[in-house]
Image (tube, rainbow, N blue to C red; front, side):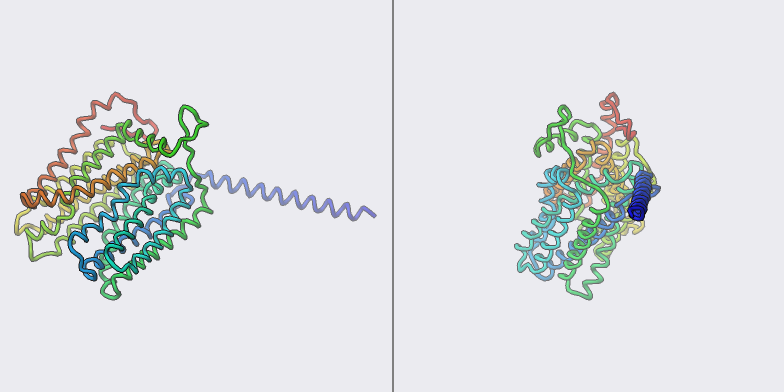
Length: 454
């Protein structure tokens, strides 16, 4: 009587064994696929979604900037000083909080933190849409910018974790390229849309963009396993660093490493000089060609085209040697471009004007790629977001004093002299890496990434 039941039990056990074998085979197959080196950057698990999220949010941000300038300038008709407070509201939180946001990013799930930040950005953008006055709008804008400070350090850290070393330059250039493309295309598209819809509706485009970005980031959590960083003292691996201990470690990484210190210092000095005249292009061309206001947009477009071209070329690299020379070339290109624009005289050739803008764009593209590359490769992986936050703080801090100082200097002299002076000063800074070459040549260099200062 038990014989049929015994056969049935045996059959069930055989089926379970077959299922287990099949599951094991699938496990080995999936593991082998995960361990397989991706051939293209788009094959890197999760990168396609990460890049899509970044691209959509960047495009939304540029629509947002256009909308605010139109709302403040034409709807509320504010005084010039109120317009000047818009970039302050954007940049002040970055200068104040980025260095601390970099520490926070590495202690919390990065994808979840970015997604929550995007959701809060949607909320504050909707509040900005219904803001009744410029003062309230500036307060909301500053709070929203404070929420967004986590994005840059989180983005840098995620690229370091997700993207293989040989493809990181591609990731950096793609991010920079979409930012420059958005800088050119979004104002054109925004200007066309303003002719069809109220300017305030561009804020809703930004809110929609960040909502889509948040959805992508939430879905990305299921695809990749990105946890929070482990911050331990090198002398005692069991002791977890506190928030401010990790912050001090990040500053130590910047101050003690000659390549990081040189790159961050020269980038900050370059930004200080550039910001002296960066907002003064309309004044320059008003003096040189008052009947051709379109020259301002042409030069800005030429700068963007130079940056995108540079990023396209550098996208083919897998590593950079002689970091100092790259930084030197970036400052030199920008310096030649600025000085050349300052030397222009009435009746100048438009081709020459565009060429100087293109050269400045080449320098800007090199500077962006090299600084992000150094942040990606020099620090320890657990310190990338902290160093990125410190870098963002220092660069953002240069935005506040320089424009006002530049305006004062222009009032005391003239616009062309200031452009020429800034260009020559940038070229002078370009020789700094050559001067410190001897001081760093005797120190150990990072063999893993083949990075040198000279």
